[in-house]
Image 1 (cartoon, one colour):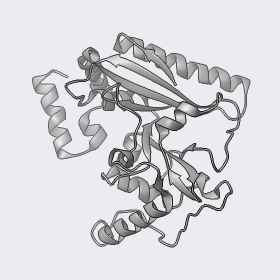
Image 2: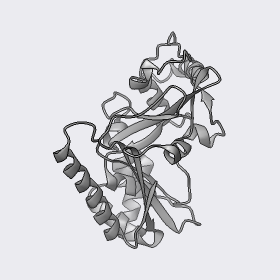
Image 3: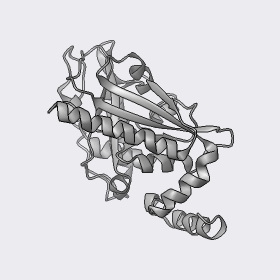
Image 4: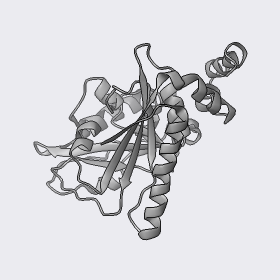
Length: 267
């Protein structure tokens, strides 16, 4: 992982412009296997990249078991939340020693992402196509002990095909187009999951550990830090772009937060 420390909001924007420009230059040289960057904002630069499933203390979690968990969740909420995506309970994911065909099309992905949006512990790590939206998530509500926020910039394909085996952890992005939740579109969301085979079964595993061990020319990760002192400037500029709590979350509470920011803090 490459770490870039910036001194200002403006410097952050310049660094991202440079990264995005480098991608466009690479695309001119090669026709295939060049991904655009995805972005993830975190309110404390010391925090690791963790899924909500990991934050619940569940690392190396059996994929087969998680699908049973989703089935249980679907049975409990199906009669109440009618807008939830469909779920196919007969999908079985097992370890057969081969690279799994389901890795390119995760079964029940839309329902899994729907659960993630509503707070259910998830193996999906959420990203956005917009470095401005990522900055909003980083600066929105930082903890008091935060001195710097971080924006992670992820590029899955950097010019070569991915090298992978069934026994080696792999990160897979699922793309933007999915019927999940209005916030998925508003936030320009994408998701990744990380998996490997262990003791005869596939398990969801740590993005952080996998990024630390990846080969060059795939799964590039850049971490950009910004001083927390830049928060007011950043949030003011994002507000002028109409990136506000209300436009991001679309709730009454978020609307009142946006209005109060305008009235009391002139953001």
